[in-house]
Length: 93
Image 1 (cartoon, rainbow, N blue to C red):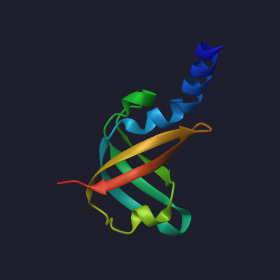
Image 2: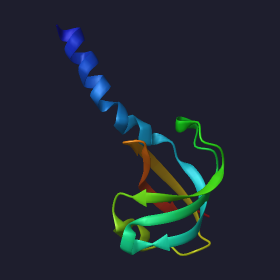
Image 3: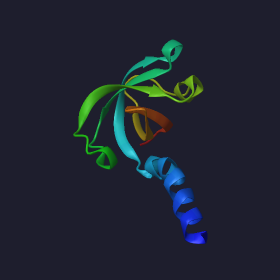
Image 4: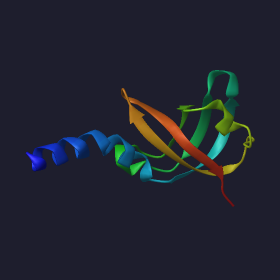
C-alpha cells in the first residue's frame, strides 16, 4: 500500500519536475496585456522541441516587467494542457 501511495504521489508531482530545464533565448516581443512573450530560443529538450522563435504564455504578467526587447534570457517552461507556459524568466549576460 505504501508503494502504491508513493507511486501516485510521484506521478502527481511529475509536472513540477518538468520546469527544471533552463533554456536560453532572446526576447523578440512583449505583450504584458495578454501575458505573452515571443522568444527566439534554443532547443527545449524536455519536450523535444527544436530551436525556433515562438510565442509563450507566462504564468504571471509581472514576470515581463524587467524585460525589454533584445534581452538575452534564461527561462523555464511547464507543459500544461499541451501548452508551454513560462514559469520563470530572467535576464542573463
